Image (cartoon, rainbow, N blue to C red; front, side, top):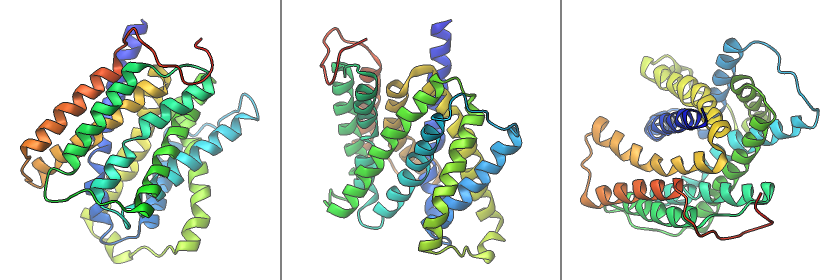
Length: 303
């Protein structure tokens, strides 16, 4: 039963990352017509609406203090992560940002070690190093080179930290026994609430002409309903079944999905370096998911 439960979790995490790996191309198309904040607000308002239709029943809190977990998840996983990532792209290259943001699983592991008083395991550290090496190979497989930009890279690192915090909060909410759809809807609500003052400050005036274009509407629908509403539910369900750390390592696959999508949709040629990077990412994922007899303590005692 436990093994079947884990397989479901792995399938959900893999399916989610396969969708999320294609969102870069979709967002790139929309950025020609909207600002990052406009895309973000439209995306999550529509996503929240879809989840409200799917699960209209009001969420009953089991403890008033749980509201802080929902607020924290909405702030970190919806607003801070996506906003910082999009702003970072304005200061640094997409390749740089992709590598830095892929550090999110490491922050997830660190924060979970602090929250649960468990120990980081050696296999996770080794897997992380292998996967990040592979992601670097993929990101810089073309003519683009590594360009250090303090502002962009720090923003991307902060986004990775935010996702690490979000993953731990979602894990806790899952332990409290909240249904995935209702839980995700409540997180989206807080994300939208926190987003409103940011949109007001940065300006929100989406192009009505762009919204009349079928291709733009389809792209927005994809990001809102599939990549947000559905995928956040499946990701949060995977976290409940596998745990924050095991689920987070699937983020390593995101750059792989992106280059495969670019090769299929945009007919971009995959270089030998990209293929090598893909192999390293897959190897890093396998190593991260397995257990080795040696462990590296971080904080506290293992349960």
